[in-house]
Length: 230
Image 1 (cartoon, rainbow, N blue to C red):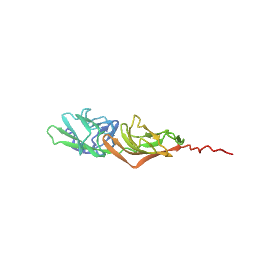
Image 2: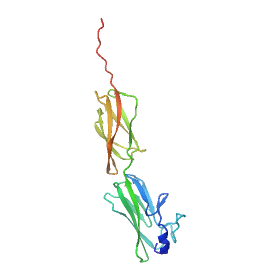
Image 3: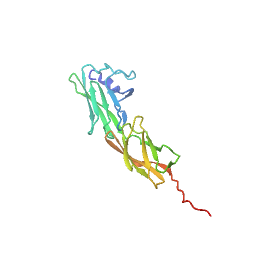
Image 4: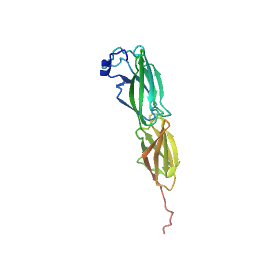
């Protein structure tokens, strides 16, 4: 960047690429909490024909060195792997918050140039919980199956149950963001209620407020004693 005309630099946005998405240094990137996607970042490339930069090369400006970092990153942090003018970042273990990817470029002994890219790690959407056999009631002592969908893969969901067993437990979300939770009815309850209380995503706990519930209806057959009819 130090080889470029200063006026041109101030008029032309420094390009950051995120996968197939191109954003300038003021753009925000939203990363769902616990995502396992590894994102790609780069500076000083000529891959965006709409914003060509003078002297840019696929591997950065000739003679420049690039120092990558993530500002205000708590522990455990993201996994940053820099390679020249490029870097990959895995945000899976980072808690909800606002972070800044920073690059410092130096060239030919000139004062360094610093640019930043703002990343928001956001809480994922709450999963959906349904009773799989609705609206058909289950019989006394049967298993009510509840289906969770829309949760991050690998998340561990904590739950409680009334009217059935186990009364508490956890379930790990499978591929596709789904998992089934079986609860065995315990008499004399006429309903089995499952409540999702929280989920652990990448070592970070998300509490559901309010909790997420679903209810299974139970058909309990009660027959009177046999009577002799005169």
